Image (spheres, helix red, strand yellow):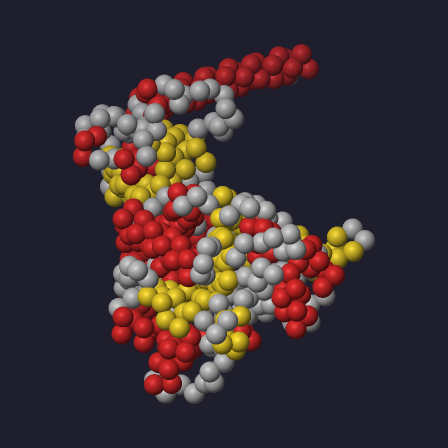
Length: 503
């Protein structure tokens, strides 16, 4: 065969192979097109689910009647047979055959949804719904769109976080310890229990403000960076303040009093309080929310006690009447007896409390301060005798109170001071304040306080000051004890204690 003949044969072979390859490609393309067409026909619901574009305020759908999002708690029988939209988190999902059951959660409210193969849902739609990760946020109508998808592996399971400890032990199911919850607080705050706790806590603040405003009190704001320890003690946080040092306020006490001297008559404030106490107990925090009250009175400091106890009673009534859903939600995980209180509030003198404790076998001196175990024991004794969880202990020994506390005129060993208790634990400490500059100077010197650092405070009383008193309440403790919980960290959204500074 000549060279030309070989070359011609090679060209013919190449052309035959090219035609064959082209034909194969055309066949594959036709096959893919048919498959895609078939797939499209099968997934007739492909426009009814998916991962939504990130919400970047592209359009205003809120005003559109077709996209009004209904709260889960508003899904009442009256809305039966209506087409509605809702936005919620995927709490759980479970696929079974051609169906997928979803539990959708919005704060402490749940609703079950069902996606089933039918005229409006394809197999692919059911599969998509089953694969949505827990805690993802979804918009649901007869369509499913994922608004924000959660990572597949959660640091804790919400069902485990709300399981009562006893149930977990008996059934061999997991529970979540407190440190794990607090380390992953954003997830823990989504549980129905946490949602209920902090909605009730918001109610306490609102009731506190509303009650006092109706009584003619004025809300004030006080500085939290101060030049001297407000309680005269060493348990203060020192901070750098330019070329000198300052302190985080242990209390708004001094400023509340200065406002009374400025003729505001009755004031209150809600704000952070800082205590540098290395106390790793169930009821101590290094930062908490203080609900503080101060008021002038006419003749006797019991006018102040009556005003504060009435405020607390109004809070208890408001919680009882308006927050039963939250109370019952918390009780599912942490069962407790309903909180009891009397009208008027029970008031005992310190000497009566000491006598009750001695009768119960406690050895203590007349002027000894109450220890935590003795406070709890006294609470149980009061509950047994008077059937109340809330009471006032009046006339504390002067030696255990701050320098600005007014001594009892009839017995210099005691004072015009009081504490208030819930379920046997202190939630408020208060007193009639000394409103005479010279007496205040003498008492501060007795407590070895640097007079120069509180000069502005003492000077406030040199120009005429009405008799007055007040007290400071710990918000987190009130919520903890009202709900019968056992650790104040459960009622502090992002707690701070000697061992925790994050998140």
